[in-house]
Length: 525
Ligand code: AMP
Ligand code: MG
Image (tube, rainbow, N blue to C red):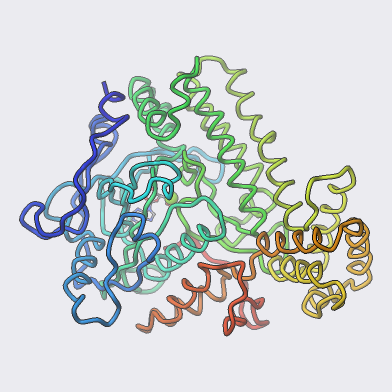
């Protein structure tokens, strides 16, 4: 049975670059997914990249696998650098037939889209985690490359990813992780001169991503909607054994899985809302069964706060706007419940499990905002105080990140007066800001100085000064397209410590300049 062979795999030997299969290898990898059955995947050799160049590596993602990172510009590491580029461009796997792409389906913008699948992603395999606590308790990281060419699920597309979108995914995955938002990781970015046609001709790149699992709601929808309930049950067993082993003990494991995914998704969306992240394409095929952020496309961080902000120009009705993300997550969980229904068997119980979303989301969001505003444990009047703040931010189109950060500074040093950078954000309604600050001052007034200091320190940890703003990503992309990855590397380094003000990085904390253009993108990637 699938479960027994997959639940506790035999440990594999650590990677020895020199001995595996004739050609030097960077990683020792295994595949477990194919044991589910042939209908779950296609075996497909990546097309790889011609003359691949290793451009960016996330040192701390590399540590997750215990991989040594080649030192930039050190000729002694040329061999290692070439091996990284060979591996993560997909060129190494092109020859050995070990990579797979998986099939899933999904609802896109509320409509059933039918079969989709990994149209440009290849699962190279799973690597043993150097430290399972870093993988949130999982022992293995799946290693997936995105953009290495066509797969059986590419439909009419080219299986490629352009440098621009790959760099955004690379930077944002790592930035989100350091913001404390559950997310797939980005190990490295490899590029090439290979031309890729989008609105214009661009160049190709591949991002290597890590996650304990790349399973999506859409994997379940695929087998459910096509009536293959045997396969659906195998997928359930596999998912429970790997991601939610506690659910195996439940009377109804499918129902318990749904509950757990609802809870994880609620925690995720609360984090998104608090850091002002808008995913942009919350289709069910982009919803992870782990409740992690996955598939960075036309995402954005809110600058001037508008609850209706969506970065995705394709989303004409704002279905996936900031304020709608919680409701859409619930809608997506209903789609997952529908897919699991043949295994759950009880429609009301499935509905109730989805309604658990609100029971998890509301307190997570409340706690997140309480921490951002330094309020500590919630009191009766706090929801009004928080809502009025959010309304005020919206009315003034105040910068989400700067406003919260500066508020933390004000709480830390009230004697210094209201920071000019805070006042500036509320120039449209200065009196409303003063009135609201007065309410906050009264609310925090009873705190002892030491308590107040602790609150302010908590606020500085809850309110980043650096997020991957659209205009910063765009500037780094422009430089990278001209061959200079220095600015991208600098951004990555600063975003690793988003809540610490770093001398010389003030430009990366500032709101976009007036001529930056709207923070929006199309789906083209
Ligand atoms: P996304 O909107 O990026 O989540 O992608 C939706 C679907 O389109 C997924 O099945 C992707 O694998 C597929 N897809 C997107 N871009 C490409 C591409 N360039 N080549 C092949 N498939 C793609
Ligand atoms: Mg996707």
